[in-house]
Length: 175
Image 1 (cartoon, rainbow, N blue to C red):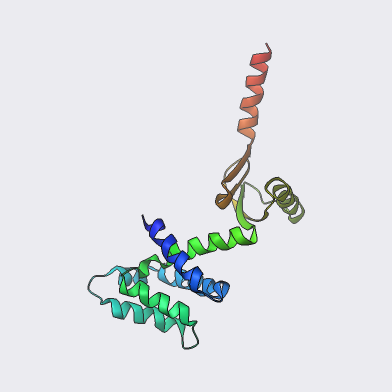
Image 2 (spheres, helix red, strand yellow):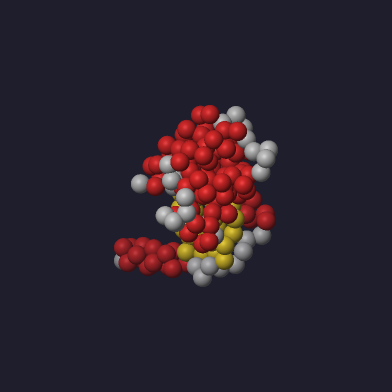
């Protein structure tokens, strides 16, 4: 439900914004600010007036803030939707990735790959998907590799255990 509402607000903002990438940068910073437990509890508190919540967010923007962003924050405040800022930023980031055809993915493995192997993997994914994919590495207990790009719905898994199981199945079928 939250995502559907965030999509409507994101669509409205993107239709009126003159400099959407700059606004998106500010929303990403606001997402980090609103993710702290104190700010989150203040935004969802029924005790604090919605005007105070709006003023709190607007004060972080400063004097030179984009007019459409200020109005957007005011509308969110009037409708008690300031807690949707992270979801709205997520939707807008996904839209920007789709427009630029550049996505971020995660490579999970027990040992990190060197820069050359990571670059080769990114090139292979670009050839396969037609999109530029920037991979970040995460260390895990997995014996093998796991690449996932959530925004494209791609998940590739190479594990020693799986190869071993498939090899055993192949041998059994051959006999």
